Image (cartoon, rainbow, N blue to C red; front, top):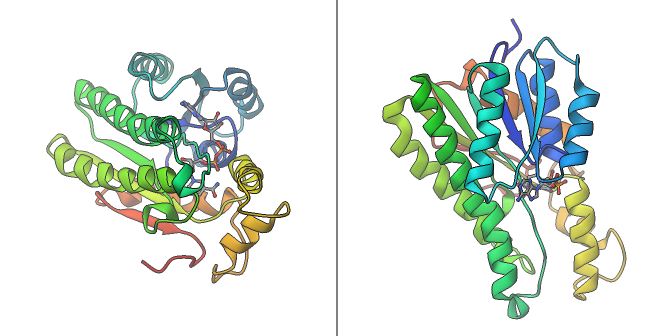
Length: 262
Ligand SMILES: NC(=O)c1ccc[n+]([C@@H]2O[C@H](COP(=O)([O-])OP(=O)(O)OC[C@H]3O[C@@H](n4cnc5c(N)ncnc54)[C@H](O)[C@@H]3O)[C@@H](O)[C@H]2O)c1
């Protein structure tokens, strides 16, 4: 049987990049998937393109993960369509590089709001739904290599992703009594629009001189010898959504091609 047959899943940040790939891989293995994103048009297009892709059903929702009412509405929508929620991916994330001494309160709050608070609200509201249903549930958070090391020019992003690790651990401890597991995965450098933007931003702040330089330098230590594609993480994300990982909780799985050995 496919690994996630019959499991009802929501993936945030699913209009592109890693989130879209997570949702598509879940569909390929039999899950029902709600693609959710702040970009309403793009996520609607992704859902439409994926109708009929797997055995499961497809829907979509526009959500700002920092807004609790919108997160609740997204969960209510998925439950109305699929009948229940089993798996919630808190994947939406943002970055905006700045030199350490230039980091502003605005930059800090923007990144911490989406990556930190958005993750907390997503975990809380998914857990409340699982408790209402009286069922086992799984929460899966997107961390990063930036959850393991502080990198230059992206201090608030690193702080936010270290926060995702501690939310995963705290959530796992708090929610275990409800038969809810919380795990996460930590990609290294994945070729997505986020990285294209980071590359441009690093040039703008003088941390790189030519397009692609920052990504090359950042990736130089990857033991696998190349950056990841979104599809490189989906074997693991589907595993984390599947029955095969039901006994795992509080753990972050690194998927960085051997970039950081911690
Ligand atoms: N690309 C990488 O190298 C990399 C590495 C490690 C971790 N990550 C993490 O993986 C996740 C996905 O990254 P990606 O590379 O696919 O990025 P991406 O920029 O390609 O996609 C992120 C998606 O999140 C959505 N989003 C942003 N703010 C939102 C909000 N407030 N509410 C709802 N949706 C919102 C965007 O519209 C976009 O569709 C992020 O959490 C990112 O931090 C990425």
